[in-house]
Image (tube, rainbow, N blue to C red; front, side):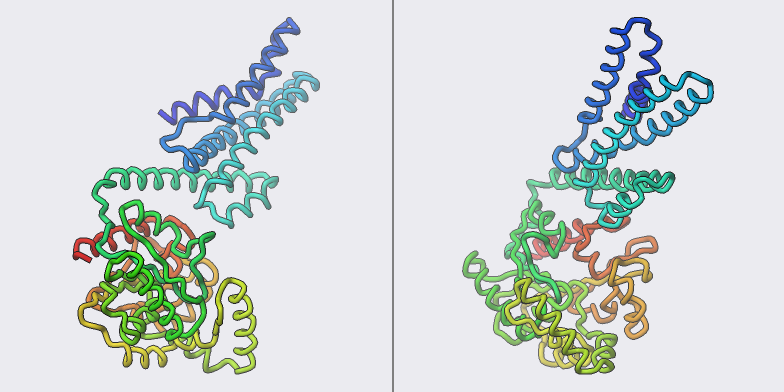
Length: 440
């Protein structure tokens, strides 16, 4: 039905953008004016109501933008051909000029409305395609290729998001993520939990839509494992007291997994933790990090640390320590940590891992670090080797089909990017659902 609607509306848009030629067939001046006005009104209405959408809000706006952009691309191509034909066949310079001017104004309106809708509503076109779209907006052929790419991305996004909404609505009453104990999500190094930008992307909302109660670690972004663990202890005590729940389930990414293990094993919160699920955590450290720390000079490390610490203070860290944070991720430091932090009976320990298929699979800077980490540590997610991620009673390895893989950032939905063959939100929904089934 949508394809038929697109054909009909495109045909009408083509007529409306060549309305002066059609109006020129009338002998009456009033009829000409009314015909032109009718064409302008149609295109204006089309811009505001190009099609109907299954969903409203952001998704509906994006879908209408994509639909209108399709009409624009087909119509502008046909209009160029028509006006060239009119000029060649000697229709008259005045007719050709006025027809072209009206067509240009109406097409410009269609383009602006559709572009604004797409730019302000789509997540998947990202920064790259937005920038390229602006830079090459007036370069023929290239701009059309970019618009086609944006249409493909937005159409795919619309289908994916509509499917997710339908799925969540269909099981809303089941509350499959309503675990006995609340979920504490613990971030990794060099990031903080912020309201303006979620470290965990779209995952928390997906969990909450299915009944989960979510809290965040809120520890410093760059500090030693011991210092971050102490902050997590305070957070766990706070949650247990507030919710009167006895325990929490921890889901921790990257260094956050080490922070959590330290708090459980050495800071006396084991009786308040039902489970620990680590996500791409370097339990056995990084040889690449060890190499960098051993080969760079003290002056370079101290200079770099001052810059990072200064920036991290502005982001909310009270006493950031760049060198301590990185040092605790080395292979030797993690070996020592593993000797100290023994798994505590009664706590469910499990882990999740993924890998990039190639350096091209990730975004900056993971696309740069991948090859170095592979040389020192083997298959990895851009930062952490697969072997280092394994911990606990159960290890789940994420490896979707295709040549992309799942990076250190993808596994927490940091870039909000839909990956073919892997729905990160549904992965976490099933992860937490499993905790509920275990009675946790």
